[in-house]
Length: 217
Image (tube, rainbow, N blue to C red; front, side, top):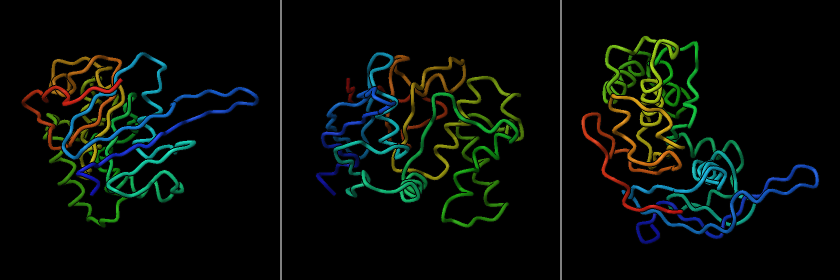
């Protein structure tokens, strides 16, 4: 391990091209995040936070530079290889949650397990999904569809889905976009213009997560 570093970015750039137009979304970012750190990426809307989070989450690749995740260079992996890394090491809470509207909270939470290398039985899937949903305060809501849940409850389903594979890194894009009186409102103590990476073990249904150990702008 590189000095205990879990995430290491070296001069990462991301450039989007549309015809003759060039948009430099990320410019020369170098960053290290150590195992167990809780980091908030801060910035105004349009500053490239979501683009950087997509790179950190292996949803996109940098145009140039290197990204080392758990001491392995993932910046040049193809789509199938990135998908495997996402499933094994990463949990992602999307800004819009990205829940499947015609599936229950339980089935939404189960999805990462279905695509994982662990071939679990239906009963095992159900047990693990119910356990993680209970941990985020959704016991008794397992069979509810997203349309039957409040915005805050939908957010907690998304958090449960991100946690179910016990990832190395939990990422959340603008996690305070939904306000709720329940546990989800206590889970992300950031401004609305932040993105975050955290150790999954820092989640607690009954207590507020400590403030980030570090903020990056």
